[in-house]
Image (cartoon, rainbow, N blue to C red; front, side, top):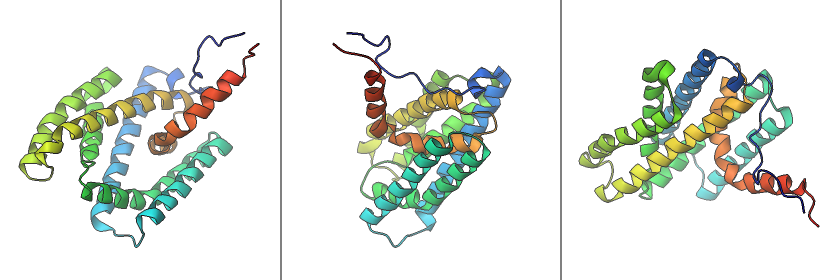
Length: 226
């Protein structure tokens, strides 16, 4: 029986990826990706407040599923390049109003998803202020601490129920951890001119929990068992 040295597949890496470039280039890419992500989160929040789509919950989820499947298909089919980058970003923009409505519905159901806007803002601000001293653990730690006074303000102004504050803090911190981990992986598979793809990847990769088990299974199939 031949066992794999690593039971999990290695992160996908492309030649000339951002992670292989100079430190300055990596920092510029990280800033652009995180600020771009913040702008898309703001767009989702704007749509949540200003746009009401005549869709049932089931129709909303179906349309989001179609768009995210198309985004995944674009990445798998086109792999990389300028065309893939802008196709992916265009599909993300089509999903923004739908994500806004989904966020509004989840918030109305009593879940504190509004904290994700604060987390994205803190990640973007940290990136701009840290400059060349940027670190992923630092982003998560500073953002997590900054969420505490933000939650105090939200509960004091009755935007959030005080009882939901602990869960909101956990949710916001988990989101920061996801963004940090995902961006570290994005640096390995994106080139410096693929910032639109990177912004789309933050959303597209949220479905990795559905596809990752299949990647692990394929990884193990490359080994023989007797």
